[in-house]
Amino acid sequence: MKLFKNIKSILQLVIPLLVLFALILGFIYVSDANKQKEIQENYTAQRDDTNTKIPPEYQGIKIGLALGGGGAKGFAHIGVIKVLQENHIPIQIVTGTSAGSVVGALFSYGFNAEGIQQILKDVGYTLMDFGLSSNGFIEGNKLRELVNKNIDNLPIESLTKKFGAVATDFSSGDVVMFTKGDVGQAVRASSSIPAIFKPTEIDGRLYVDGGLTAPVPVSQARSMGADVVIAVDISDKSVEETETFYQPNSWFSTIDQSVVILMNTQLKKELEQADVVIRPNLTSIPFFNFFVMDPTVKAGEEAARAALPEIKQAIKKAKEQKQK
Image (cartoon, rainbow, N blue to C red; front, side, top):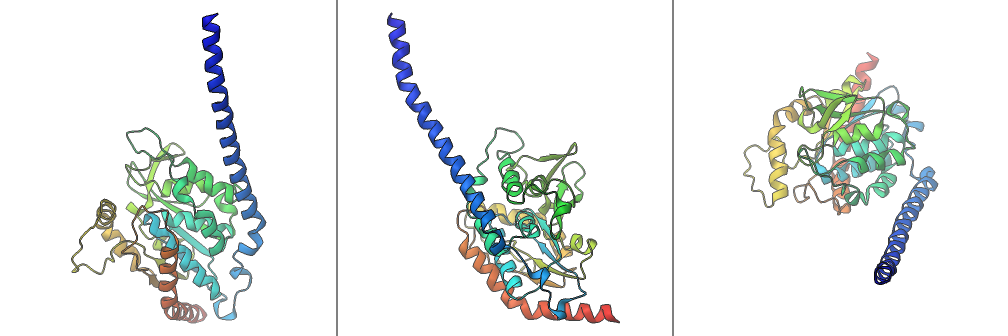
């Protein structure tokens, strides 16, 4: 009898907790469902229509956009896209590394800058996908799910723009560009920062962050047929500022600069192949601060507006050369 009373007391305590837990899970599910419904309902207003209204001066030229890696600095890509859309500059080819692949995938699906910003505004919580592993403490599954559910689970080859997500083969060290298959998994592979994210397995091979081999994937955009390539470099310190004394002010900035040094040579090589290089001023933006978006987007806008004359000149030059 005493045992029965103890069990009854435990159940009286546990059942309300289970009900509360179920209600919380239900609330999270409904909130997520409502968010996705809102995104889809607003899709028409948030879609990129620049490729359906190509001005005469841009016709006959394939313009590529190469979006570099850089953690939370990748929000600057949204600002760049916003300016390109406002000025009706059509982008037919998109390549992305790491953060650039996340933004690039959504852009290639058809979202405009506003739509991308709405989807990624809570990405910091999405990245809290922790798991116990000697290879990294973030799984990356939630990032894959975030991308795929917003693009209706379409494969890369069905996106409205030609898209390539760039990653690094963890065994050979070779650069690999995914141009078909699971978009979210390709983005996950491209964004798998070593020792932070677990390497991503695709077809039996492991892949890590594309920034190790193609920090700004310019040559990949060329290989996909781009006549003009606009590169967006969001690395913390420009590769041209080699004589400037750099003083890291945090653990994050130390990691960021260490990554830049490791990929410095490859970054120079890639940027030399671009027609235009956009470099937002992101020195005050932490690499891992995914919870502050607006200043980063604004920095991307400002840099893109400053580069507009150069972009238009590069397109004009490419068109003249093609007509010869």
